Amino acid sequence: ILNVEQSPQSLHVQEGDSTNFTCSFPSSNFYALHWYRWETAKSPEALFVMTLNGDEKKKGRISATLNTKEGYSYLYIKGSQPEDSATYLCAWKEGGSEKLVFGKGTKLTVNP
Amino acid sequence: DVKVTQSSRYLVKRTGEKVFLECVQDMDHENMFWYRQDPGLGLRLIYFSYDVKMKEKGDIPEGYSVSREKKERFSLILESASTNQTSMYLCASSLSVIGPGHRRGQPQHFGDGTRLSIL
Image 1 (cartoon, chains in turn yellow, brown):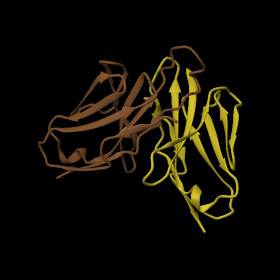
Image 2 (cartoon, each protein chain N blue to C red):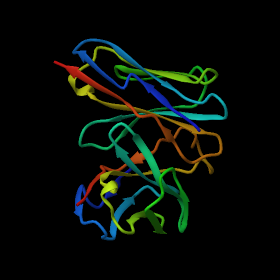
Image 3 (spheres, rainbow over the protein chains, first blue to last red):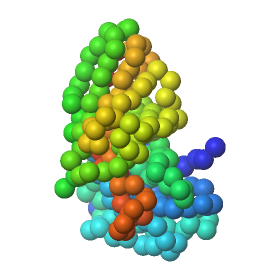
């Protein structure tokens, strides 16, 4: 069974706090690791697609790192804002597959 | 920008009805996917299609079928709706990993979802 695990399940932080979540995935036959942000009443939006071990990507206050050898990725949010409140999904793609295997997500709530 | 359009945001149907959920994408993507999302279970793949008239079962295909007669359109069919199919349904599309250009870093693009209630 190919499992993608995300932790924590949910997180409440205060505006201005920095935070991070974890995604763990199978380390064999790695092809790509995706991060999506899913806000209530909207469609999931791609944040990053990471393909190389050691990749670091940044988009504004959000950044992500990738370790394919040990099978984990971190998503960091610096100075959280209420508009960052969303469910953050990671998804793993293995070589030769068109499919993504999703984790169950981390639900972030940023209190003003 | 890629646009993935699902035909309905909210739908209410009765047990035993045949239900059609439609999805259209405008970026000539080879792949299209149907997921359902339930609390505590995350996104689960029902079916996907990698080309016109081609389909593959996902993790939870029971009670569903799909149709892809044209590249831009992917339909999910509930043959005889049951209450345990009440859920949020999401459609997505993506480029195939096979083909010219840098495709390895391409994401999936999602529709807004259909919240389906079966009474």
